[in-house]
Amino acid sequence: MIKYRLHHNRKKKLREDGTALIHIEIYKGTSRKYLSTDIYIQPQDWDEKTSRVSYTNFRADEYNVTIDDNIQKIVSILRKSKLMEKDLSVNDVIELINHDDSNSLTEFMTKEIEKDQRITDKTKKDLLNTRNRLEEFNSDARLQQIDFRFIVDFDNHLRSMGYSINTIGKLHKNLKRFLNLAIKYKLISQNDYPYRDFKVERENTSREALSMKEVIAIEELTYTSETVNDIVKDMFLFACYTGLRISDVIRLKPSYCKPSDSGWRLEFKTFKAKKMAYLPLQSLFKDDQILSRPEQILEQYYNNDNELVFPKLPESRINRHLKEIAKEAGISKKVTFHMGRHTFGTIMATKVPLPTLQNLMQHSDIKTTMIYVNMSNDMIDDSLGKVDWNN
Image (cartoon, rainbow, N blue to C red):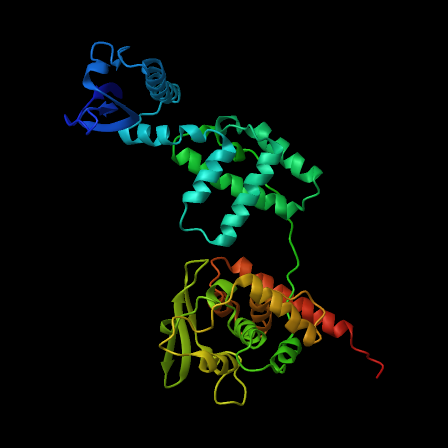
């Protein structure tokens, strides 16, 4: 059973001004932790009998209210754990106390986003957007109030604002992330998880890809060497020829590139999916040249002394220049860097067995790979539909 008590000058050492800290000891058996009250007083101002600040101190009322607030937090946590039939450890109590001020849903989200050093700037922006949408919907929502009715009302609110089904689905996905964190922190019970009975809708979206003819049109563009457009063009073509995401292309290191007698290959753990990628570049988009198309690009940029294969460029700048490049190549499609991955998958779907394509694209589920087979079939149907059979 968790217990607590107060101590003044626990370390038996006064500061230069003659004061010492008041701690709250939280203990269970031999396990114990000490919670600071941030209150420093002189020994004569501590009432050992009542475990409160004596009125010999002119700030006694203020200090005792702070102590009572801290005790109330502990009592509340222990009462909730009893009602939820949870056996808390001392560490659990400390964790809950530290998160007590985050019972506000949006405050909790803000703190978790700010302290998470693992997320990318793009993910952080996405999570903050979800927090902002929730703040617009209900800025006073507490974690313990997030039930099935809250989720339904939030969903209806988003629909009334005109958001697409998939955008709404993404916002729900991000909210799930924080509710699962709250469960792990024991701020809410697993039994109170509202998404158990709520099904998030998704719509199948069409993925656009470039034809090989369009890829060649970009390849044939000429720019002054090492200008931004020249670099972006090569990075995008490299994605079209390897299926790599922008996160992997911009982080590609020389150590990931393995030369051999037969040619180049890539071996590394992908940034987003955290899966091993094995790409035999010498066998991808091979024509009459000695080097394959991706090998030609790699050899142009590879320098073992550099930190990265390609010069550092922000994603936003890459996509901005890519739009210019597509326009100059006469491509009317809305070209983004990720279209390079779709292009690779669509073209390769007509050339290699499905399991091979799955491995090349690091897909966990063969159903994801099948999307590219269907895209390839659609492109064939579209091309045949434009044939003038009378000539």
